[in-house]
Image (cartoon, rainbow, N blue to C red):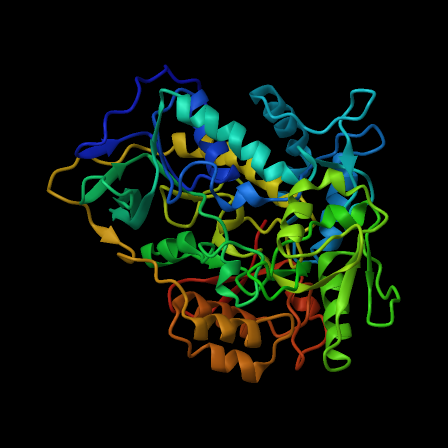
Length: 506
């Protein structure tokens, strides 16, 4: 990207707000993309449905995967990522992530993120499922998301080039002449002036997070319902890999409001073990997540009222303060007894289909983080590659957004509007249907029932899962138990209401 002359700070909020880059979402990906664009001299609007540092990234317990150890390399990191992806990962996206993630960790350190260090001063790298080396950088143990988003939020809030629109919901993308030219949004902040906010931009970057809260049992906050995917689909952009949903093996089982609380992979990396009803280990705790989740599910289905527990009694739990705090609130003491766990919807590998610079199929619209699909994760995300993805592709998307042409001069009141005025949350019936028919195991009969659901994204998930007539990674069909090698490296792409098409991405 060519160097640019620094621009003045963005104008105030009254009337149309004209910027060079609009970023939707204030999680790790959105914050970092906004900061990268601002550091390149751009005027940026950062639109956040919640207050800064209150996004889903804030609760992320995993770390940032990067080949930082002397005995590690990008090639080894890539090999582990491809193995976990079960033949469905896009090799070029894997190469980008594993080659660039170490530099992104160093940049985060330069911005003030303090990663955990060993006594000798080097980074204390963790081991997680599917990794052949210790390569996961944590900040504050299991509080990595909190530490990173707090740091990046502080930079964004004080950067004169970034106009932060907190408690503001995007209601539609703006499409003119076949391009995304910005967005419409409404303030949800009490006491704020009523009415629509109009933001015009060269590039609009969706960083709205995933859609795992569409499922009844989930580790995600309630707002993770695929808002960015819904906006992009309605505006004409393609989505991909919607059938590939990762179910985290170890989500807390509780009846008091803490059900679904994520018990981080790092616990197993440090020695926590899974035990069945007989008190026996039954799975390699550090196998890829799809294997561990299915093994737990098999144990739970083996007999009525069966349960699986995570035994952390040998761990130094002071390294995981937020985990201990949440368990104590649920009336559990992990130092005294194992805690009950079961799989829950955790991460959507699918999203807005993009190239390696975050560009969607709609010019002017980009996506990054969990709402995007570069093909990186394939059929099973390798642990802690998601935060690395936020930073690697967040920088790339920021640079690509600045290379977009400016929107044409506004010659009439209002923009052409494409997209829903409200992204509808799922009903309890939709969430139950997704868990029942598109959960850890699927069948044609159940997916056909889900295809009639009232929620557009649920229908798209069903269509993609029906089109992938095989079992691979996180996608398991009881009626199609084998891998179809014809689908190796293929991504199922959804465009509007058309049937998904299987595409090979170079």
